[in-house]
Amino acid sequence: MKAIPVSFTRKKRVGLALLGLAVSAAAVPVVAAESGFVEDAKATLNFRNFYFNRNYVNNGGSIAAPGLTKHGEAEEWTQAFILDAKSGFTQGAVGFGVDVLGIFAVKLDGGRGTYGTQLLPTHDGNKPADDFGRLGVAGKMKISKTELKVGEWMPVLPILRSDDGRSLPQTFQGAQITSKDIDNTTLYGGSFNRNSQRNDASMERMSLNNAGNTVRGKPTISGDAFNFVGAEYTFNDKRTLVGAWYDQLEDVYNQKYFQLLHSQPIADGITAGANLGYFIGESDGAGRADNLAGVKDQQNRTMSGLFSLKVGFNTFYVGLQKVTGNAGWQRVAGTSGGTLANDSYGSSYEAKGEKSWQVRHDYDFAGFGVPGLTLMNRFIEGSNVHTGASITDGEERGRETEVAYTLQSGMFKSLSVRWRNSTLRRNYGSTNSFDENRLIFNYPLSLL
Image (tube, rainbow, N blue to C red):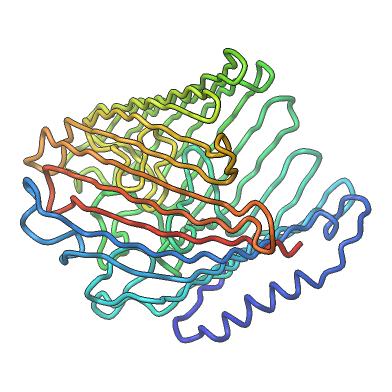
């Protein structure tokens, strides 16, 4: 089912449409009965207010041009509305259902002088749009514990993670089958042929991340489809998961991914954890990105390990990551790098040859009698970065802090506020070092 892009000139109609969908969903009578299309339906309208400020700084080789956006600061402020409505399945041997995702964002502040936060699309000489959005629909069918989904939605898979780190989420168009008919096992398979990135209302072909192969923000080298299969198996009282995946961006790259996820109680209030991953990537078919990066027959091996120790209300992390081969880690442009141990707000530390490490501490202030308040601090350092023709030993380091609070009761229960403060320093590139603040308010209004 095809999504409907929202024109910049239809803000009022889109707002009314989203409001109408919300009211309609809220008006549906829910009967406490057997499972069914209506009985299992869920709908949430998320109100997301997002302020983003990034100040570029000159250091080392970063002196040529102020910022990747050619100015010293990127700053924008938006209000987004995200309607996520999911029906249940009709009764019978074969159940049918439908999911609707309505997303719309309005600019509150921002202009040509401070564009580049990726909260908004740009047009007419880097002018941020006043608004943008989409209406995506997906049909679904279920037999026993096997579900087929066709249309547009936000897939969150280890090898394809929709990015939801700005005003609106990235969405993909395609089909996916998920089966849990085998005990403790989940099987996946599917194909996507288009995506709408987090700051774009249109549906475009998919390309290789950071390939530099864009003209006016559109990919010039891309794949016809992203195909994948995967399997996950849990055991040890569901404390251990092993996974194996294969994915292919046609004629651009293909890769295999192997994962081990384990949680081990040690003593009362103490739990150790490990998330290990290994990617094997290479050029696919015509290898459309090979000559662009100056390397024929690209290949990489990416190793990732995130280790944790939870002690009471404290959680300590150590992250280790290494990329080898003649290319960087491969993923679809615009997707999240969250599968990697050292993925962060400003970088994924995934460049050719890069090795990186991380230390992190999380604290839950429920230990001080303030449930809902959390604090995160981390530091990540990467070295041996290879990029372009001249950079063969680049370095980058990031420091990030997040303070978050979620209301636990009252009229606005579940309202959350997050303040993210970070710095990133690199000794290569053209002023890609910066200081950054993000302030995010999110209120999920349950309609069903």
